[in-house]
Structures are given as structure tokens and as C-alpha cells.
Length: 285
Image (cartoon, rainbow, N blue to C red; front, side):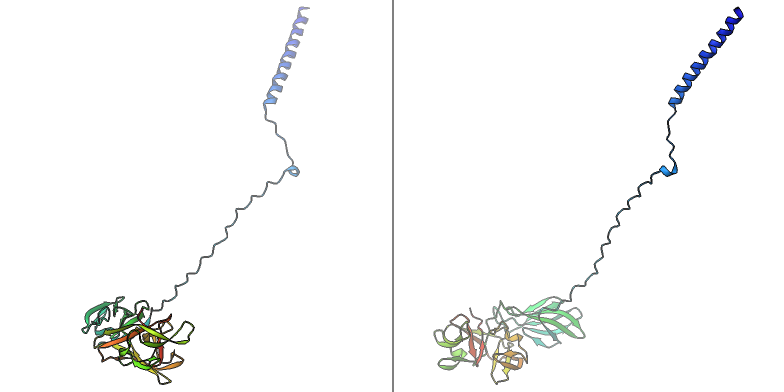
């Protein structure tokens, strides 16, 4: 009997141990991470990466060279001993020139003043005309000659220039304020006017005039800075240019052997008058 009870106890203990083992095994199994097996058919393709946008290349602008600048004014080339306007060139050096400058305003000078010009420097007659040295080469000096229309010199027509008046042609030096002269109005009509100003200006013996001869025979001597009726001055004129309904046959600088030049200002809106039959402007205001 005792032997049978012991056997039963052993069996009971084994059952308890087996139960406990099953419990612990279940708990351990629950601690293991659960994985889902996915067959190849169930795999989803990963989204393709979106490529970064390719920047649009910005074209490099082709450099455009600046336009070549033209000299401001008429080009003048002088050698030693030659003169243009107020400037007499005496010596030409590799980088500068020396000479005499005969100013005509505010006081006309008989004696030229010594002047030295380097490239880029300017000589002036004191009013309308200036010469800027731009190049020295091969024994010559090149200038640009510029006219300042806002600074007319008070030196004008040659002595004995004939002015058209209702009383016939009268020399410019003999005209007085209050006398009559022909002018044109703003519409271009020829009308009689009253002279409201006159001028008589001493000039040096070195003063130059522009001698104009037209194809129709009219001619006049006037200072380079004297204005015309269309914005030009006498210094701008050249053979072949149109003037007063005709064509210029001759336009040249010439020496002036008189002591004074003259001008008048007629009344009216234009200030124009006829000199040797050629309609011109006035330097007087």
C-alpha cells in the first residue's frame, strides 16, 4: 500500500512539473517577436525616388563691346606753324604741344598767350570755338573743334558788309539804333524792323574770318562763331553745303585786316537780317 502511494506521488509531481513547463513555455513563446512572412507575390514595390529638378542653365550673355565713340566735333590736323581759330601750333612733342592762343573774348588780344596742351586738354577763343588735343602722331597734332552755340563771341561781320534795309543797302558800320532794316518774322515773311542794338568790337590783327561764296554769286565775310538761321554757325560751313536756297561754292578761313567787327539786332521775334543778301542771325540779345 505504502509503495503504491509513493508511486502516485511521483506521477502527481511529474504532472505538476509538466504543467509548469507548459506554462513557462507558453509565456516564453509570447515574448518572441511575431513576424509575418510575406511571399514574393505580396511584396509591394518601393516608390521610385523623385529625381531632383535639373536647373535650367542660364545662358551667359555674350559681351557686347561698347560702340566706338566719335570725336565730339570736327577733326582738325595741324603741323608746326599752322593755325586754326585762336590756336597757333609752334612745337609738337611726343605727348604735348606748345603754341600761342589768341583769345577773342572777353577782350580781343593782339598778342597770343603761350599755351601748352597735353592730350585731352583744350584751347579756346574764350567763347564759341574750342580745340581739344586728341592725338599726336607723325609730326602732326589732331584736335576736335567744337562750337558752343550758347556762347557766341561778340565779334561778327566784316567792315563794309552791306545790310539790306528799306532804304537800300547800308554798310554795317554805318547803321545806328532806331534805323530800319529788313528781317523775317516767325513765319518766314520778310518784314521791316527797327534796329534796337548795334555793336562794334575791336579784334586783333590775327583775327580770322570765314569767307563764304555761293553758287549764285552772293558772298560774305563773318567771324567763325557768327550764327546762321538754322542753328549752324559760319565755322560749320563747308563747300557743297546748302545755304539760303543756294549751294556753297567756297568756305575758307582768311585773315582779317580791319580793326573791328560789327553786328546789329533788328526788332521782332527772330533777330535775323540780310548781310550781302544772305539771311543770317545776330549775336546780340
